[in-house]
Length: 234
Ligand code: AMP
Image (cartoon, rainbow, N blue to C red; front, side):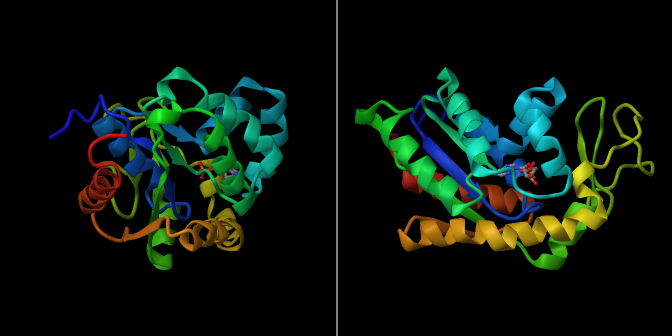
């Protein structure tokens, strides 16, 4: 096997509705290929925590379960992708979410980030999940505020109700995972993000995979797609 943490991988784009497993699968890719995960949801939450101007604008939009306007997203994404750790590639989790963002990203990648001689086109993987399964994943999602461990009270419950197995902290529900907001988030996904898949499909760049399987099975499938896309390193 080639040294997966030395070769160029290029950009990996994971598409899928909230709850499809983008975050979980991104972490697997990070571990195997040694490239960073760029989660725009996390970048926005960091901005909120730090009280930046962007964070102040994004906070109420996110709390309503709506999408932050494209123009606000470009600056934070560009700044992050220009950092040195993105040179061999990166996993985008939660971006692009509109066709405008997809077009912007193509233009950005054409001109920046990679050494042109080694440039590798993005591999775009769509995670397909049944709607009822998504509802279970989202309404059950909990995290430990102390150690960050993730749980699902329906699918991967803690040993003791609503408490972390590791340190006993009371588990938290993410603000936008509240049940009344979930259908809004899924609708926003349907209306806007589906066009992102259409954008890449029209160019023959979309690989759709069944993400209703176990985490390990989905991970193995994703690795095979990445390795086929970029077999010898770019
Ligand atoms: P996530 O953690 O990916 O589920 O994102 C949480 C929230 O952040 C979303 O519901 C949006 O409000 C906002 N957000 C994250 N990524 C984007 C994006 N690419 N474009 C617009 N809004 C975003």
